Image: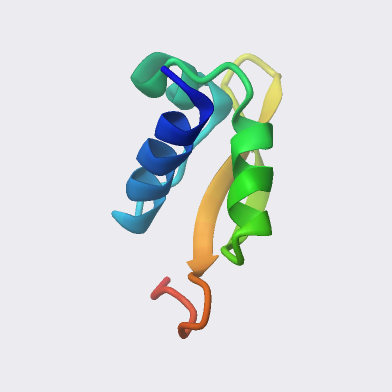
Length: 77
């Protein structure tokens, strides 16, 4: 799957009101570089926040949430 397709699928995931972690991105979309796809979306004007979450085994990963789309009001929380 190419970068643009991954980015669009991740965006649809976030627009559905879901958060996404690197493990979910890898399992659901074959994306090994979620932070790079998030960067691409931010460059398009999307406001995406990251929160560090515990995986349950002591490791922490980023969990991304769409906060605002370009030229729109903040997404409901």
